[in-house]
Amino acid sequence: MFIGKKIVVGVTGGIAAYKSAELVREFIKLSAEVRVIMTDSATKFVAPLTFETLSGNAVLTDLFPKEGGFSTVHIDWARWPDVIVICPATANTIGKVAAGIADNALTTVIAATTVPVIFCPAMNKEMYANRIYQANQSKLIEHGYHFVRPGKGELACGEEGWGRLADLADILDEVKKALLATPEFSGKRFLITAGPTEEPLDPVRFLTNPSTGKMGFALAERAALRGAEVTLISGPTKLRSFSDVHLERVRTAAEMSRSVQKHLSSSDVLIMAAAVSDFRPKAVLQQKLKKKNSSACIELEENQDILAEAALTKGERIHVGFSVETENEVENSIGKLRAKGLDFIVLNNPLEAGAGFAMDTNRVKILDAHGGIEVLPVMTKLAVADKIMDHILEVIQGD
Image (cartoon, rainbow, N blue to C red; front, side, top):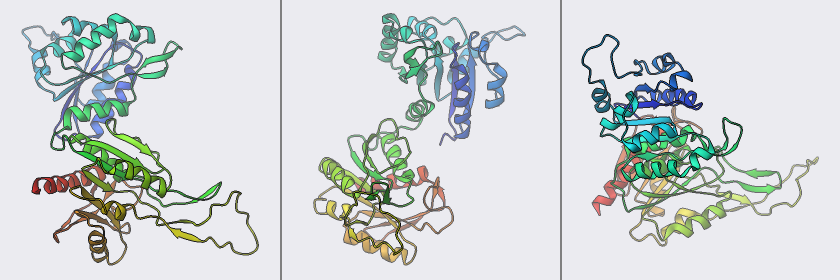
């Protein structure tokens, strides 16, 4: 995701400094090149060697080279990155930057840079609520700096309240926005479904499928990063949605259908990536079905076809479907595309290597309404989501 991107991580003196090591590790996993600047206080919590080992680069702690002589290290470091992330950001460092003070390597680099700067505050709840701190934060936001709101919970001092460092996932989302956001879907509203549905049989059992929702959540993230206003309707999953996505959780196919209908008329694009149950038990038992000597017979009835119902009011809205097939894949998918009036359909066979449920990769074919077929190799689901977004953009521009 971050191939070719350069990130400077600034670490200041707070107990949450140890969490910055994990953040650097995540950036490296995403293929970013990372450098770290530490304040003198930060080195009291975590040794510079930790960050040098994780990043593969020397850590900057001093503006002045040990051997003496002329140095413009602050300019070099200010020009090098695509984004600077201050994690954790103490009230002291935030106050200095707000006042225009540049008295150490980190604050001097911040003063000299022109790239986005993201502060991740972490401090005691009273320090965070302090009116002077809040004024400093507001001032920096007005000047174009970015902040990741801290979390609420147990603090290092043992108290409870706002001020603990935000979850790394929230910090990563803000960095993604700084590095990857584009405006091509600005003003467009996307409605995306994801995950399985569960159809109750009795109080403890239900019918479902192995879908994890990863493809739908990836689609929601990429649409949001490309400027869309996104509503994601998800069946039961353990996934966290991208921070700018409006998430609605449902359980059954009927609940998903009602939620889709609620948002459909105000949407410009509908992407049905959910693995919706085709059938549900005709009757839901009020008590647990007991094991008996004879075989139990469960009568099923069809669920409504959400995408077919949406086609009745399609108009200019773009509709994208997904097709999971294990035989006669292209023929069956073309039939679905035509029957439901889709602009294009994404076909995948879970039996193929690199495809299937609960995986981070997928292998798909994209079939459009004009007979075109694009065959994609095995890719991450985020990469597949970007390809789907490219096709949606082509449809929009073609109009």
